[in-house]
Length: 281
Ligand code: 13P
Ligand code: ZN
Ligand code: NA
Image (cartoon, rainbow, N blue to C red; front, side, top):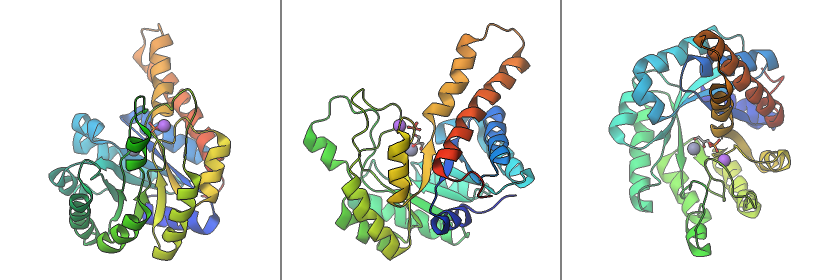
């Protein structure tokens, strides 16, 4: 069943768990997420990144929507990291349930104006909006402490940002990174998350954590306790696919695709159990 992202997150808020948003690139990925969700009786979010949209086009989004509609559990379709107005406006017309406005390349004021504009366009179509405040890095190799701190979500700005833009979900930057964490492990500012949680409860926004690949079970659980309701997962699921491609010497493409689907599904199942969404559909 296709449900809106907002409904999924509102149930997660009531139930004190989080929903996984899994980046999908093709049919195997879509099927892996849906199969995992059905097996675990879990809600899920199918998430499309601009890079995969560039290749798959509107057809990829249609596939996600059909898969969500045919699933026996609630699934929504989300557009991840929208970096331009034009792209976001196009995607809004493709029938997704929610979009992420990524204005992190802008200075604060510009990000606010950009997010506010897309937020009003999305809401006029009854769609949910997630936006990022702060700046998420890739694995931060050579960041100075000042650089690192400057990228974190600013609590005071967050209040104004939420009130002005009317966003429904806030992607927080608390030291989380896309891709792998440094060998020393993640350095998440849980005190900041705690403050952002209080703000989220006060303003009614849902907290989102990008870069969920590579977090320990303990950290994930702590983040859920501190209000995270949506975890974005890309790298771990993608690596499951890539590992199959690397290790497989079969010439039969269907066999490889099937193996890739099974491998990705296993990772997704594990995440659904960890996020507490398993059994909640
Ligand atoms: P990971 O690649 O670390 O899982 O991050 C995914 C993400 O944030 C997608 O938006
Ligand atoms: Zn992300
Ligand atoms: Na990560």
